[in-house]
Image 1 (cartoon, rainbow, N blue to C red):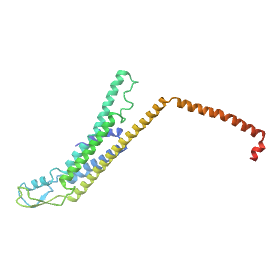
Image 2 (image 1 turned 60 degrees about the horizontal axis):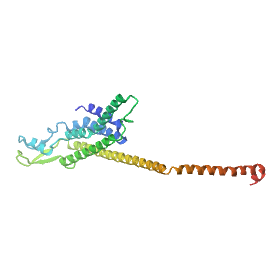
Image 3 (image 1 turned 45 degrees about the vertical axis):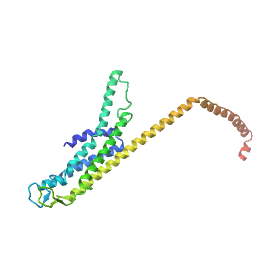
Image 4 (image 1 turned 30 degrees about the horizontal axis):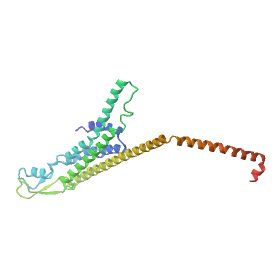
Length: 270
């Protein structure tokens, strides 16, 4: 699989992501894709050859391996990385759709006219697309973690498994190659996936609270504007009151200044 091409496709998502989204993308490529490509593939390799059973019965080792490892960790993680990053492409496609609409609008109404203030800004339908993509990513992460937990019993890899599946003649002991190393990488990938889930949830909460705050601010401004429209005399009355208070203060200030000029010694003594 060409991970460089895959990374190039998703690198454009950074332009439309929040801070949580940028951290999520960095974690995916640094702590998951890079670890997968550089180390995990080599650790697993052709793990079926390292699966050793204490019998020479033809087909027994293959059947036992298929029984305990219905799908390899490495292939399951590859599917997880593909599925979990695909929802981000929804945002890129939506922005591309907006840019195409903007281009057609300018051709029809001139270069000065705009359909969107900013095609990449998360408002309207793009906000919903971004939020739905986060829900999809979170759901896919949880589904794959549950599947891994269901298949491999709490993400554990024992050194010894006992198999009695036909065509094995009796209860056969089978040994997994490099179980400790595989267990370490399994817990690392599970931890990285759990951290990505936390980032997605934080981003969902951030987007919703920001939208609620913006909506509440708009409602407050609208109510204040409606109140001023219903009572337009309040502002004029306040201005007149301030004007009369200012006129009333002028004679008092003038008398005070005349007193200070006529009796300077009195002011200094005071």
